Structure formats: structure tokens, C-alpha cells
Length: 485
Image (tube, rainbow, N blue to C red):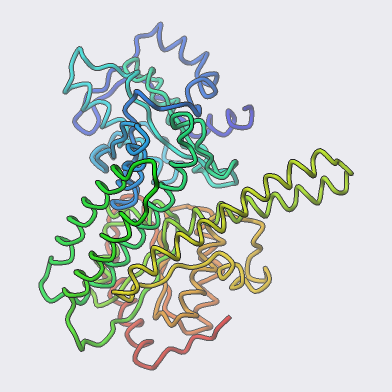
């Protein structure tokens, strides 16, 4: 806790009064409330950022991925939680007002989203507004990334407003492989875990259908229209699937969506340069934050594939297994028989989950690929292999740099014509990935582009994207000159 306090003091801005920001007057504390809050703020981190059963409250989910967030919310509703996806990017001015500028951009966006949502609800309901009826869902990760501190910083900001102090924050964490037993109704954790994982994979597949079809559609806008309807249907299917986990009720409609999407494509058209996106998971998944970079690349002549959400979930499980193996070695050296049994039990559970995830992911992708040749996902072992026995970057360091470096080389191995690294300005893992990939891909003669974002409009952005696509087209036309690694 002391380490977290020291880190947060450097991030939290001095102002604590309610101010007019983004067109909304937030309710600020009076002087007496402010004094009490300042003395107990850090104690609140353990009291109101917890894991608890969210039943009976409205669960507020940030809109990170337009597809993934809605299917995850549907998974929560399937187990009885009243989950909604918050409107995004409307409260960016609020997020910036109550941060210092040292945070990475996703922190400002998500903070603005929750402040805007709560204030909109307060104005809509008036005296009927009851903050204790809401709960804010904000996962976390361990390691050096600042993402692990978002929910703590945002707890301190929410506590500055008397109207929002009663809104708790619930989280899941990479520390325990995103365990959900404490946040869903008793007895439904296993069901929710399986359903939510499949929902994430379905979200990835729906996105890949869109990216495969939209650059080649016969009629402009037809792909977006189809996929909007498809997402609504899959949300309802996930929500009403029932505790029997009948995944056939999801795979059947998914196959139909893929077949209908294929019918929208032109035939006989040459394949565009394929562009692979890597980088920080929020920025690369959130169209508002990355200024719709996928559509921009498509407009300039590319076919784009973004790194998946499932890749990160699989990576977290892979890392948990690796850590369990290290713990087993330590217990063996210490001759701790009890420790060996406990670690072996945990390792076996993680391996079973890993096999289950692989099975379900392959099942979903195979269902769609029977009708449409969407791009397969990167396996974590394949990504690890691309690091060349840790010569390029040591896998044990972790963070998204592992996935970005290995994922970029996987794209190239499969014949992609360019790589774009999308990340928040000053993001440490993505900056590390850039320092490795930029000279490496230059040597391999593969076009590479860094795309950092902090909410500002870069004056040379379009020129950079057009130039990058020109280079990718040249790479495609000469048949690719990259060397496998």
C-alpha cells in the first residue's frame, strides 16, 4: 500500500473542487468534507476498490472495444448482473480536468467516461439518483504498466465528489488470472468464465469479418450495416443462452453471419496490402482514441488486421502457468511438500483452462473460416518463438511489449506488408517495442509506423499514413522482401 500511495501522489492533481468542465458542473465537497477526504483518501483504496458480488447493482463497463465490451456486458447479464456499456469519449474534457497529464491517455478517457456517465445519471434522475446502486468495473494488471494504478487513481478522483463517494470500483486482476469467483453470484463463476471467454473470441471474429469484407464490399456501408445487426443478434444470444452453455446457439448464427458477409464482397479483385496492428490494447481497440486508424488505413488502400482481445487473455493464462512452474521449482528447492501440492494443483487447473481456451478459440474460428477466410489469431507459443529464444526481448519481462514484438514478427512470417504500432504517448511497453521493431523491420525491408496518441490531432498524420500505405503497396508488388525469424 505504501508503494501505491507514493506512486499515486505523483499522479493526482492538486485541484479537488467541482469545476465547470466539458459543459458539466460537478458537485464539489465543502471545506470540512475536503479535510476529511484528504486524511483518509488512501485508506479508501482498500475499502472501495474491491472484488465483491455485483448482483443488485448496475455494473458500468468502459467502452474499450465497440464489439468486445458489449459482448462482455452481455455475459454479465447472462449471470444476472445488470451490466451496461458507458457512452465513451463524451467526457474527455472531464478526464483531462481531473488528471495531471502524467497518466497515459486511456486513463484520461476512462475517467472522463465514468464522470460523464454518473453526472448524466444524476441530472436525469434528480433526487432519485442513488450512487450506491452503481458499481464501476475497471480491471487491473500487475507489472510496471500504469494500467495497474487506474482504479486507484480514479477512486481518489471519485472521492472528491460527495455524490460519487458511494460508487464502488470492482476489478479483476492478472495477479490471479482474472479470477471472477468474487464478483458474480455464487455458483456462477465457472459458467461466467467460460461464457465470457467465448464472447471475447466471438468479438474478435466479428471484427475480423468486418476487416476482411469492408475493403472489398460491393456497396459502400453494407458491411457496417450487416455487422451492426450481427452484433445485436450475438449480444442477445449470449445474454439469453442460459446456464446450459449451449455454444451451438452461438456458433450457428455466427456461421450465417460469415456467409452473408462473404456475399457482400467483390469477386476477382486483387488483394490489398495487408497491414497488421500491434500495440497497447486499449488504444488499438478504441476507435475514438486512435482516431479511427483502421478505417483510415482502409481508405488509403490497405486491408487491416488488429491484434485480438483473446490474445491478451491467452497471454495472461500462459504467464500464470509460467509463474506456477517457477513457484514449483522454488518449492522443490525448499523441500516444501505442502507447497508442491498446492502449486501442482494450481498448475493443473491453469493447464486445463488453457486447453479449454484453445479448443473453444479453434472451434469459433473454424466455424467462420468454413465460410470466409478471416485471418487466424496468433498463438502465444508462436509469439514466444518469434522472440528468437529471448534474444530480441526476454519473454519473462512480460507486458504488451512481448506480444507487440512477437506479434509483429508473426504478421511478417505470414506475409503481411506492413506493421503499425498504436499506443498512448509515453507508453513504456510500446516504446520498448518500437525501439526493437523499428531497426529490425528496416533491416527486413518491411514498412513500419509508430502511431502514438494523446487526443491531439497530429498535423502530419494523414501524410504519414498515406506514405506508409504507399510503401506497403510497393512491398506487396515486389512479393515481400522480409526474412523469417
